[in-house]
Length: 459
Image (cartoon, rainbow, N blue to C red; front, side, top):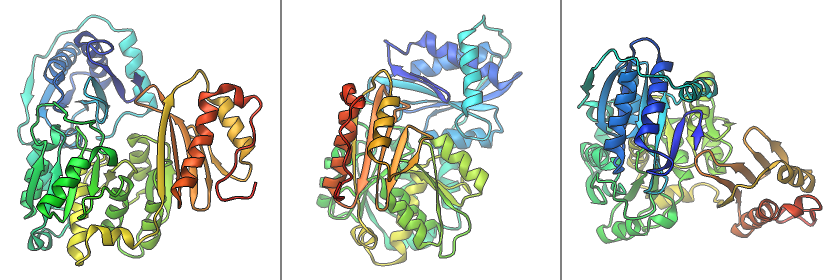
């Protein structure tokens, strides 16, 4: 799959060293004359070979390469800014299954490329010429992870002494990704007693790598067995954090951003909270409690990050467990999110389950179906069937009503259509999903659709 901010695919089938080298060379040409480019990777087993291919491509474009080695994506983004580099390439397929890998292209501001710059890189890749040679310089940055931890702990909104005094017991699942290289060290510096699983950084994911509730059973059991105060799970490139409460129950990824908002903002916050169109209403509730409004963007870290900077928002992120705090950097950052959660827990003797109980609860239901030839007729049928919905067509189609919403959109990372709905009751969210699913997988329904029904309404 080719997108504006990079490429991803199945290793050996869609993504080969030759393809990786060609796109890295194109990125180097986009970056300018003799630039410095930061390169890092997660723990996937194809990572070392692809890192060599990326270096060859960049050197062939006349770049100097700064290699941070195995590191989280937010660490790589921070390193781009630290070195005043022309950009960076993160070799990671994030939450995708073990057989995938990817290149993510980072601009000089530490944010993934926007549409114009991404299109230019893709154009250069299609017109790939011969290597120009030039520099043969690869330097290692072995301190990038330690700098990342230092920057998180230096934030004045994180009271390190107060967190250390609580001596939290934390259960940690790093899914054998890059999280094992940073999360234990961060938590130990915060005075936590860490019980970990899957901390090896060998890329042999023992489960589906996305930190969604259905994949966190082993972490929940670890929380119960060790009587931990909280459980943390990260994805392979450590930009998403999921939370398990003190009872061993996953609370859902959207609560990561909601809790971070409450930790980062006081009452009467200055500026909005930015999140994407698929983020839970729990984030709106958290922002409202702090005196802030929510501004939504299309799905994708780059959209959220740029809106945060343009609006000078104090915090934002995505409902997949990604927290962006621009005073650190404009990228999703799981180590930062973990520090925010511990900060919130340290302020009052309230367990994670108690923090969740303080706000209204919703149920989010997600589904995915194979992508068909066209979604336009599906969107038209939904708009016809739900004339009272507030529509947003910036990223697929989002239909919203007070206290509930439905989002239908093509995935940026997989060849599927994502269906996401949220409502106070699980059955209402499932009903919305089912109505959308039928329209996507049974195209004939879009020509003569029976009117969809809004859950809880008399129609």
